[in-house]
Amino acid sequence: MAKLPSITGEELIVALQKIGFYVVRQKGSHIRMKHEDNRVVSIPVHARKAIGKGLLLKILRDADLTKDELIYLLG
Image: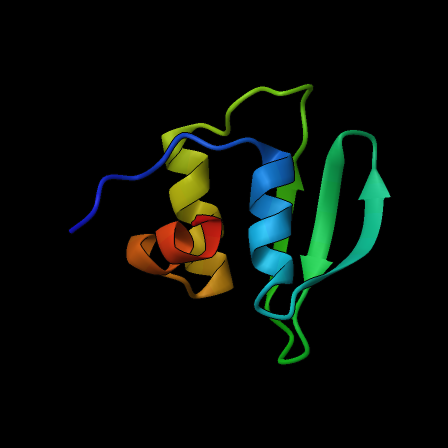
C-alpha cells in the first residue's frame, strides 16, 4: 500500500474535482464538496498548510477513495 501524501486543501479540492465533486458552499476556511451520488466531504483550506494525516484519511473514507486512487489523481 502506498504512503499517504502530504497535501494542502487546495490540492485535494483539485483532485476531487477530477472525479466529479463540486463545491457546494464555503463557510470561513472550510469548503463543502458534493458528488452527484450524494457523497459529501468538508475540506479545511488554511493558507498553504498541509491537511493532517488523520483528517485526510477521514476525508478519503467520506469520498470513498483509496490512498492509491488519491495518489493517481494528484499525479
